[in-house]
Amino acid sequence: MTTIIDQLEPPVRVNGSQNSEWTPAVGFDEVDSALGNYFIEEQRPREQAREPGLPSFQNDLRQKTILLDEPLRPEDQFEGIIGCSASLREVFGQLKIVAPTDSTVLLLGETGTGKELIARALHNRSSRRDRPFVRVNCAAIPSGLLESELFGHERGAFTGAINRKIGRFELANDGTLFLDEIGDIPPELQPKLLRVLQEQEFERLGSTQTIRVNVRVVAATSRNLPQMVADREFRGDLYYRLNVFPIRLPALRERSDDIPLLVRHFVQGFARRMQKSIDHVSVESINALLGYSWPGNVRELQNFIERAVILSPGKVLRLPVSELNQHDSFADIPGQSPGSRLTLKDAEREHIIQALAETNWIIGGLKGAAARLGLKRTTLISKMQRMSISRALA
Image (tube, rainbow, N blue to C red):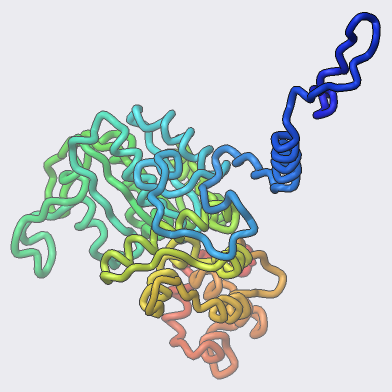
């Protein structure tokens, strides 16, 4: 290593004798300046290289706040879906593979994971992008009306059918039909759905004329369809027909790296709508979000951030972090992980089975299961038939 002293010229010899007078190649003022700059550079903290793929607000963990007004990078989103975690990128890879085909896709995942956004991305990346995208929530329509909603009806097909109605399959012709919550479709309607998936044909309610369609079906559910097949609540042949290309969407707790990006995205949207200026949030608040399990997934986070924007009077996002601890205590179920919590229907089924077991499977009478559950005997029998509850299977 060359030092400052090495840069000084040695004494000059004249006629074999050493000249006692010599001058350095570098002036003393310059040496003093060079040494000063050397020690300043050595003691200055070196900035760590930014890890590729991380958003800018994660670059320096010593920061006390995180900026929220920076625009999202193109790699932080895909077809309007925010996130760049490894599990979400895997979903994007599967989506890119199957989107150009006309194959049926089954989206699996908990409530609030963004299944409709994935369905729309599939449609937008397919050759049907310029044709209709029609959505049906099978759980939101009464079972008695779902057949008419899907397949349509003729005038006079039933009481109140004063006009012909075009069903969703016809409306989605040459496009994509998104059947959300397919696990809630009633058993009596499943054979007709299976036929239209296989043959692409059906009849309107009250008509004998066969209608042919060209529809790509994307189905989604938060329920355990294989278990429903085993419990005889869902037809096995229909499940296998839907399960051509399954895509499992990760829960938010499985991709917590995306939470800061989602917070920034939601804050920008809500602040713009409410005409507020919110540009940063504390690191401590973000850490609290990262430590929460989010049983409601992205939908719960979105609603939480909307509430936080309402409660924030200034430029700092004020998160009601104390609510998260309360929600965690309410959501905990002994012996179950957050991803295996019972649905309301599953809990009702377990409650009925428990009441029947405690009454030795006696349904009627003052000491029967119906009286214990506060139901009529006929109502309990109907529920047992609908849920495939029998003593032999219990």
